[in-house]
Length: 304
Image: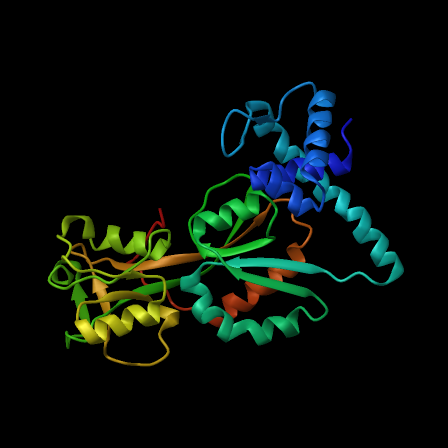
């Protein structure tokens, strides 16, 4: 059977999709990596990579093999964990990814509390878009994702953390509520593609039916989008918990059917996660912080 080292090389090449880059990641020469990959394929009796493509693609055999190798390497790491625990030098590591429209308020609110909850744990947090979080979970690059749901994947454990209303930042209007029909009169300032709040905004406000202005800006920072609204008019959408004051500039939105837009924030981890006890502590802290009454008029938007 192929060696652990060969498995690590196969994973590196799967992620890099290029021999030179993969060899640099593995700190070996390109010929060494190429030779070990070839030896692994000979042992396995099938090609893992299609070398006729650039960048490299997995063969059908490779597509089936790589998830098994990832699981095998993950289990192999548990030997080192067990050894370090026996020696009293083990330090747990929890890798988290959060979508930007949640991390912008969640981290300032809860980071200090999380450090206390997970004392002695090495905490690694990064911002990723929804699609990237799903890939990172599948490839075992993170342990835990916080994003807008729903996500239906039998390989993943999904927990509803809280729900939050989505409001319009619209200073030009003085009423407390606006309708989706009335929003059509104003220019929408959108997040960049790949942000789920952008997709939710397009669907609920039916922006695909509106004509775009000749001049437009799309950004990834909600504070900047609000500044563009203040300077140039129009509106943008803001999640309830990102609002830090009682300004009348934030309006409740109702559709023609009387529905109020909201989103469901979920926590995702793999079904077989060995770090569930740590993840559960963070989920409970978020639920305590952001739990609120959820109106029957709220319509949970899909992020796709």
